[in-house]
Amino acid sequence: MIDIIADYYDNVDKLPPLSTVEPGYLYKLLPQETPEEPESFEAVKNDLESKIIPGITHWQSGSFFGWFPSSGSFPAILGDMYSIMLNTVGFNWICSPAATELETIVMDWLGKLIGLDSRFLSFNEDMTEGTGGGVIQGSATEAQIVAMCAARERMVRRCQLHDPSNTDACLLQTKFVAYGSDQTHCAILKDSRAVGCRVHILESDEHYRLTRCVLEAAVAKDKSMGLIPFYVCATFGTTNTNAIDDIDGIAEVAAIEGMWLHVDAAYAGAALVCPEFRSYAVGMKHADSISTTPHKWMLVNLNFTALWVADSAMLKCTMSMDKEYIQRTENTTSFIREYCDWQLPMTRRFRALKLWFVLRMHGVSGVRKHIRTHVEYAKWLEQQLLADGRFEIVAPVIFGLVVFRIKPQTLAKGADTAVVNQANQRLVEYIKNDGRVFLIGGEIKKIFVVRAAVGSTFVTKQNVELLLNVIKELTSRIVSE
Image 1 (spheres, rainbow, N blue to C red):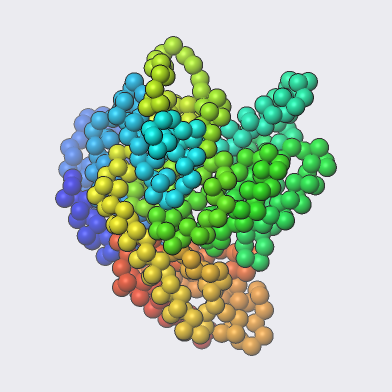
Image 2: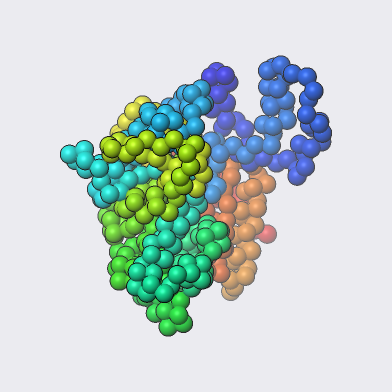
């Protein structure tokens, strides 16, 4: 099996990065009923290679530049294999003490590595218990819904403390409102539905950031209507453009209004392992919770999101459930964590192993080299596109994302926004149909842009050069049409 995995990675660049199968293809190839008798591994393997692999989009290909990366590495695979072998159900400490304690340790390691304030760590320097701590979640969406639930609980308690007649928590919650921007990940909409609160999406500025003044105005308006602001999500590296919200200013508003501040650093948080990027994270230390997703850009296989909170007590009192079958250990030491109280599901895998393997086998130097190499490639691509003269860069290239478009002057004189948008949409479609590389596009403030996310674990300069050549070649075709 190890050889099969190694062979796949050795040859993944020879495969088209995007699957081209038609919807429903697999229903025609597989039986409609479960096999009655056992089948051999070879039979299953043959079907996987001939029927499943053709329907796979190869996120690990060096020519995959779509969405954000899904990075993985051999150390992470090894850690996952050990986790699968052990197959622990680590909902509390006694289920597997090593699973709980390793998670606490590596989450503190990772928090220190990206420069988090000490209030987010489980242990103080003298190894006494801190007020904060980290926990592994399945995704940034899960991390945010957990934070939002804790924020809701905190605001209910504050409202009831201020006015004891507010005994109906459900009625109170109908007035709660959360905030994000038009560039905040759409997960905030899903999470607010699950939590049962309103969410107001605010307009970002010309740099695609949520700013203090916009948030302040929205909060004042909502309060005048009898609503209760309780939560705001600031983003460190938005999905569309990698914009960084005015986290410092947003934190000041959140502190004044008693709102929970969550910082979503799902993709770009990985860059904070490199000290040169930490100046962009001003204000993050004032957050109530922070999440980043190492399975995007830090060599950790799916699925793995790190969530830190400054006050773990609020998280635990929100998520804790007590039944005799849970078999809790008397909490006489700070080394005991009941992580089922830090997340929505009760059951949890031993995911700390794969981060432990990555951090040990790559080391800090290896992770930093991984990030810096991708940023270097992205900046090279930016420079080449500008040097070509037919493209414009829509947002600053800070990390590994290049957002660009064919500029209006490249097309026929007097080309309006609709014509330019159509040309860029065709570019994305032509690249998709060409099949040598894969990227995506999207609309930002009524202009259609092209996104190239450099971040595959196996991407090389040659892959990025191929991407550039494909873009230039197909742009020439569009211009000549």
